[in-house]
Length: 45
Image (cartoon, rainbow, N blue to C red; front, top):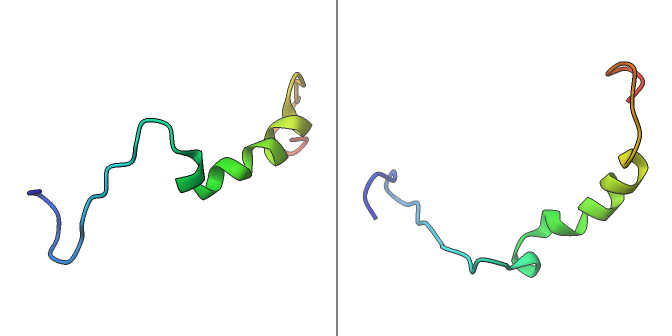
């Protein structure tokens, strides 16, 4: 594929592949405490 610096390779993942995206396991830790809440400021968040 053109446009990449030498030594880099693009790997195309399947459309839905949470097992290949480590961050997917973190969403349930971050979403729950923030869901359905309104914060007055960034500091409160």
